[in-house]
Image 1 (tube, rainbow, N blue to C red):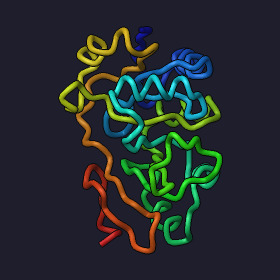
Image 2 (cartoon, rainbow, N blue to C red):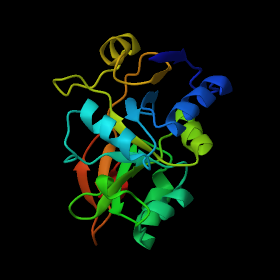
Image 3 (cartoon, rainbow, N blue to C red):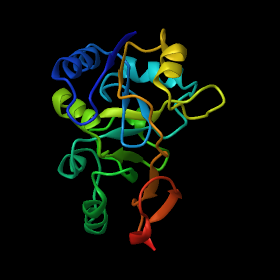
Image 4 (cartoon, helix red, strand yellow):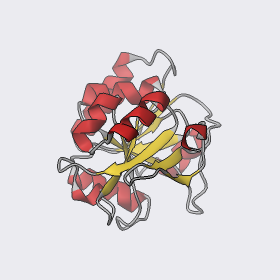
Amino acid sequence: MEYYELHPVNPQTRFINKAVEVLKNGGVIIYPTDTVYGIGCDIFNKAALERVYAIKQDAGTKLFSFICPNLKDISKYAKVSDFAYKKMKKLLPGPYTFVLPAAREVPKTLWTKRHTVGIRVPNHEVALTLVKELGNPIVSTSVTNRKSEVLYNPDEIKLIFDYQVDLMLSVGHLEGTPSSIVDLSGEEPEIIREGAGDLSVFY
């Protein structure tokens, strides 16, 4: 795979452009978020999505979230209630995955059985710049080993995934905690996973 080291706050445009080109051509990349490294592709590329599922050794049964550039963009891909909007406005961008009713625009392979999707707006310049430049959301699933342990060291990630993905954007060692997952698809918020970020607004 191609491997580039980026500045986490002011990422080099030429490396972002290379990653976007790979995504547009149906490639799979590894990129940093505000929590951990993620494996991603354009959500509208079916073949690329199948590659991500294969890499994660998952037959489409797990909820894969995807990244949007901002709260406004989320409404294109999910049905957002007034309550959900107010909560997300306080917390985004940030280390949260919000489960919302899926809009028709989202490929059904990313839907759960309950017709919901997981959406992120991470507080990380590299991830946000990627989706803005691509013009489409990208899949966000944590980089893990075969034991489902999250990997933080880019050298270890490169060694394991060298022949599985097309490109990696590195910002060095990440010591993040996976995002908190909050289900806002029903009448009451439900905390699915307590991870990074303050969840006190839901209690």
